[in-house]
Structure formats: C-alpha cells, structure tokens
Image (cartoon, rainbow, N blue to C red; front, side, top):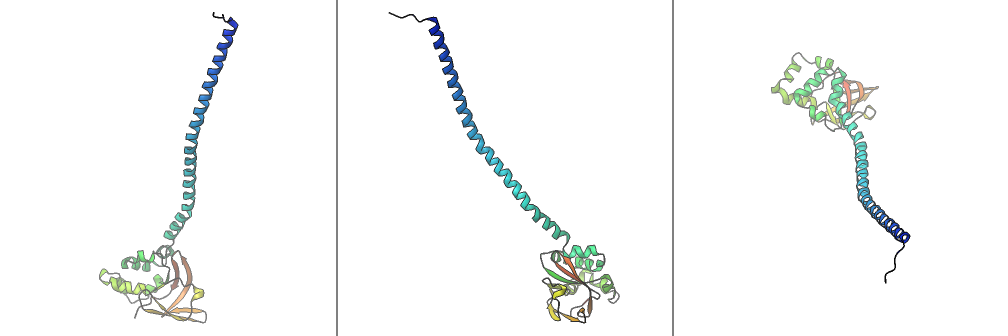
Amino acid sequence: MKLAMQPQHRNRISRLKVRYSTRCAFEVSLRANSTKRKQIEPSMKTNRILALGALVVSVLALPAAQAADYAKKNDIVSVASSAGSFKTLVAAVKAAGLVETLQGAGPFTVFAPTDDAFAKLPAGTVESLLKPENKAKLVAVLTYHVVPGKVMAADVKTMKAKTVNGQELSIKVADGKVTVDNATVIKTDVAASNGVIHVIDTVVLPK
C-alpha cells in the first residue's frame, strides 16, 4: 500500500533538490575558476619576471651604451679634430691610415704638433708626406709622436720614451719646461677617452 505524499512535502523536497543542484553547480564553478586561476597565475608571474628582467637589462645596458658613445665622441682623433688647431695632423693621420688605430682602446700618449708646427717644416715637406707613395714614411713620422700608455704631465720626467715607431724620444724636464727632442710642450693633459694629448710646437722626426 502506497502512502500518499502531502503536497507541501512534495514542494519541500523539490525546493531541497533545487538548492542541492544549485549548490553543486556553484561548487563546480568555484573549482573550475580555481583551476583556471592556478593556470593563469604562473603565466602572469612569468610575464612579470620577464618584464622585470627586461627592465633590469635595459637599465644596466644604459651606462655601457653611454660609455661607448662617450668613447666614440672623445677618442684622440675626435678630440684633435674638434680642437681646430690640428687640421694638418688629422689630415696626415687619415692619409696614413692610422685613424682606426688612434681610435682604438689604447691608451696612448700623443705629442701632437699644431698646424703652426707643421708650417715650420721646409716648404713642400707636408705635401710630399701626404702623397700615397710616401705613406710608409708618413706612418713612421706620425707613430714617432705616439707613446704607448697614458702619461700625464705630473708623471713626466727626464727620460727616454719608446714610441709606437720603435725608436725613442728624448724627454727632458728642466726649469719647469718639458721638451721632446727639439720640440717644446706648450699644453699638457688634453684628455681623451683612450689616452692623453700633449701639444708641441715642432714636428719631431725619427732618426
């Protein structure tokens, strides 16, 4: 014999079923969202790490880039070119193919003759040295003005200094004056990124 269920009981059971179904669906949704977040969060974290790494690299690279830019604009050749009083010297360096060398890491100490110093040479000397067939001689003259290393005025003393040419310059310090062979140093410590320039009033010639 079946017992008849009262209408109010049936309604109550129906409501309970609905609540149960709704709760189950909500829990399933929560679990799905949680799984999705777990999948997304590592990706977001990885992206943040990559972005931070890129920022750090760019910040670290900036000083290096600035240093390279400074070196390029302030090497010995660039400094001599911008000074305005070494036009003949710069032209000779270019004709001798020594630009790249004097823009290298160095350091170098250059005893740089001014335009007036070159003008003191016998007539036709500069023009002759600049000819392609005399390139080897021009290189020998120019490298005689270059000493390896960075020698500041305070470090200069009476001595023999071996040049890039291979021969030695005779440097003398007396009565507050510095001479290099037969040339007088008229300005010292002109800074460059790859060395230093000391200005001389006469072109010195190898033996």
